[in-house]
Length: 118
Image (cartoon, rainbow, N blue to C red; front, side, top):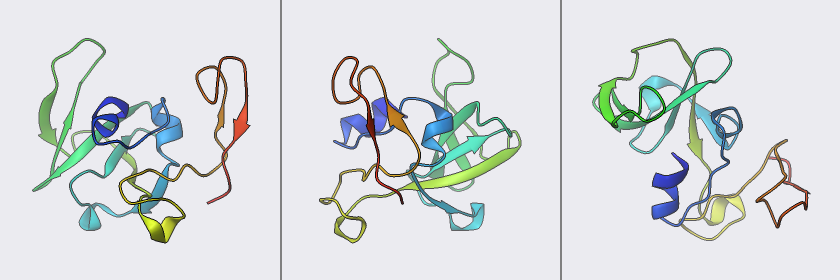
């Protein structure tokens, strides 16, 4: 997901656990294309909702990306990444918020920065 959002100029946290809290939670009936569908209680898998009850995802590391039903496994949450001026950021840019703290690769190697609360 980080790669796909990055192509659109939007940053996302690296892990699916952090991505779970990178926006507003919505129900499956409210899901829109681009929303992140987080799976399992441990948030160990993520797919991108593409509409019509489908997600695009890589089923395991190194696998080809494919389409599957959004309810293919237990859904933990559906996250709509926060973008736009109504969320303290320019249009098309993710406003990073929540408890996540960047380590290596955040603001610079070895530096740490906390995101503002949502």
